[in-house]
Image (cartoon, rainbow, N blue to C red):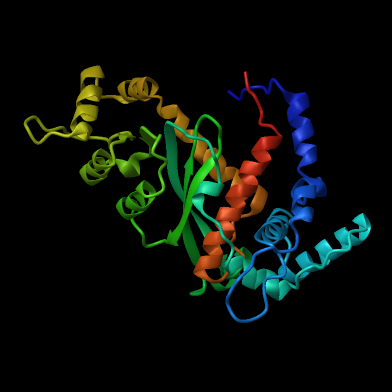
Length: 306
């Protein structure tokens, strides 16, 4: 049963404000448009600041523009606003995106105690659905794996990792541990996290891994038992059935993990299921920028449900 939105009036305004161009290119960005960075390296100094390139790239991804269209979009915007600032060419936007000073700490300043992690696939290039239907799947069809970490309390994306589809969950989990804020105590994952290796990694990082055990799981008794065995044993004591699993999920607050799926759905629904960038570093920066876009949209307002 779907829940009704209580703050529809405020949330409706936030949806309208998403299309405001001044929201994406604010006065602060305009004031810091020209680079003030000094360098001792040979060659021409930077003309545009990182914040200017970042704002341009966010406009590009939010409005689904090509590089050339982005240049024309910003030029026409500045003409209408009567702003006499230079606009970088589409080729410079592409080059500068590679060297943007982006890191996970810029996604959020919040210090969460819980984090929900999940992965999904995003397409990077290949044939369209019609071509695949008529001629079969192309060898050029490629995907990247996107792993998100979301704070269940604020809905903010705290980190995103872009990797090859061949990366397994234990490898990705090791990578996520390097980006977890020190304040995190509980990590929520789907059933892919149910392995002794994952639990050992979590214990090493001093976090509690909350993941449902696979159907038919057994538990050990003895000195080598782990927290995974304690989880399986708890479900056995509750009845070892679907009702027992539901009760365990409620006790551990596992329902909060669905919020990372909501974040993935928002990225794909608002910003698309395809990465525009070709190089690995630009694909990584594109995902970081898209995560920043979602976090920026959150500041406008989120729906509050009954």
